[in-house]
Length: 227
Image 1 (spheres, one colour):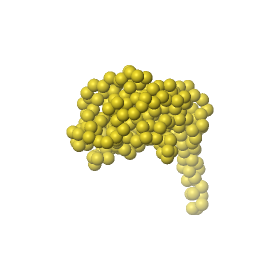
Image 2 (cartoon, rainbow, N blue to C red; image 1 turned 120 degrees about the vertical axis):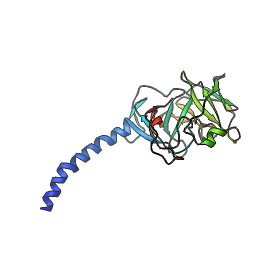
Image 3 (spheres, one colour; image 1 turned 120 degrees about the horizontal axis):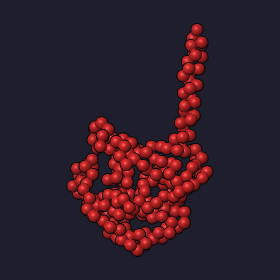
Image 4 (spheres, helix red, strand yellow; image 1 turned 90 degrees about the horizontal axis):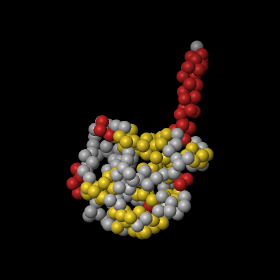
């Protein structure tokens, strides 16, 4: 009797479950995925506790579970937020593209110059979901890296790489920075990122449960587009 029940359970639940998993797992690897944000290097755009949607078909199609490209139809553009494998430790990371192949990237006092032209910076209101200490002791400004300006965050009294370059980005490489310019380990420290190591583009915040707040997921960050 027990043996018959186990067989029936396997037919009704076990086999369908395995079929669903066998379909969804490769899709997650090659089509879309989510990524948890564990650090403040992309504040104020992405906060600690955000879970973001990664569009793995934004630029190419890869063999599931690998970085091998089957086909390519685009490349990351300046201003886009991408997920990639870090050049040093191969850990998945999230940063913003600030230099594409052929660009000359320079920074003076935490302000970017691309191909000799200084970007425009204007004051921005702080992200209200940041911890109070970050809102009080940091500076926020809009950075005009693309047609849609994004907000960056500076810590005036911290010691960081506020000046570098100019550096020319080689073919097939990208220069990436965190939006929290004084609290980010990025291309200033470990160099360029290979095109083949870029996993996909971050499209939106799926949900957010801030690490510094013991609260339920935040409604004002639900399905929030990342720019």
